[in-house]
Image: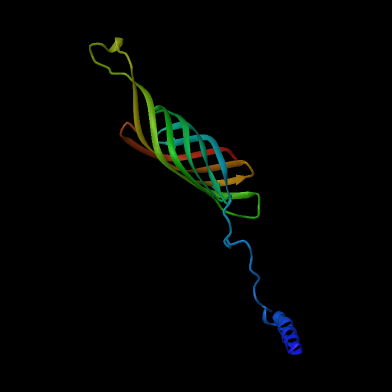
Length: 182
């Protein structure tokens, strides 16, 4: 009986590797999908725009970068132009970098939000024209941009179209910006 038990044990022991051949080894990592890498992103750009008005613009975007290709963030800026004198855009920004093996990475950028404009209003009346005083005016309007460009390391260049409003007037045009992306 001991001989039969020993022979059965030997057969099972020798057959086990043959029966398990070609089977996958169980991994301890249960997440088989590629993990997304999320990091902080900061974009600052400066430039000019022209269309319904001519002016200078600067934007600062704080956001998160997902896999180094998509950046979603909240931005704030400062604009000085011939219509509203000064404006502060506050917007939601989305930027996509197209992957590549070269240092130059093409990108597209979309932003939409509000534009708070500040300017001086001079109410002229025919009886007190020389003595008229000014009033400070504040209005909220539309801020939207759609641009394309490229990034080389930290340097970025974009150009595109915008749509803005000021005091119930809508105007569009083109803009060109350069800056740094971290």
